[in-house]
Length: 392
Image (cartoon, rainbow, N blue to C red; front, side, top):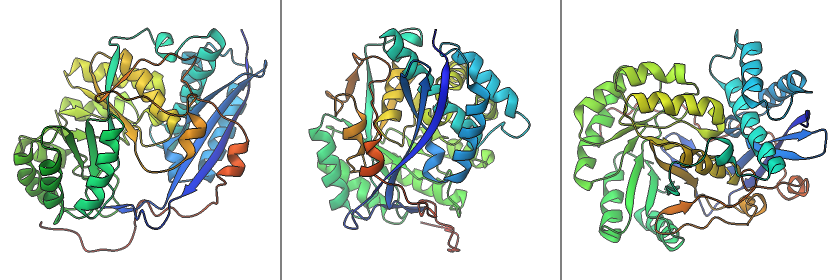
């Protein structure tokens, strides 16, 4: 079997037009940044992965890719579990959580994509085969201050076949009005998820704000209330969950099964989310199995490009407790060039198992010219010293 020859990282960027004005409770979303991992073997074939952390930082990702590239050169491409353990074992002193795991996850996904292409098999078959023929997928955006803009975007998603839409809270004082207008517009035709986006907010609300907001949201029958407090705030999660009938979901930035364990032992979540382009397939399976033991459904987080969208689909199809996977619905053209078939077919809220080799994604270096990346401080998480929100 072929061996790993090289592991590279390519950063792609699409600056959003100012008219889109994407924003949420913890910052601004001014650009789509796609950090693509490319694993090439000694026969010239390649596989693709993605690193969610690369949306927030640049140089550390490059250094970590170089580190793991030197470690894995010459590894048989089918020894994916061995590669994961070698990466983790070599970095365990400084990499039990955080950005290093994210880079490992991107490499892990790329290795599966490469092996699937070599064997002419879809990744879900390499993961043990499907447990279902199709998986629910939701359109994820809602970065709008007004009902009009949000409903316009949700209508676009509905036309494309989505039946669940996820919105972000911009301001807790105004979100109830937006939710009420969404429900009035779509009635029972489209379900809604509300993401507070407090999990990684630099200056999060108090727990009481989320409790009050959850109480107000109960009457609107949303599917789940996502990340209502900072990830570290385990007691806050427990307090919020105890106070509401809503399903509480979290937490996309937790990268390993070990890190999720105290949350599951404490029953802090009703729905567990992990980010596929952070944990990858190997650690993702451990997280999903742990959730299964605790009788918790999985909603796979995928706030990225076609690569992580397809990774989420392949993985979700193989997991018995996967309820949803995510489609980042921000308006950008990068996916057209990454999807093998240019777009994904959604039918009545579901995507069927893909007929492809590997993940069903492709890459060429012309993308670097089309979507050049300029290193910058990302505004997605604002660090301004705003007053802490105490009430809604």
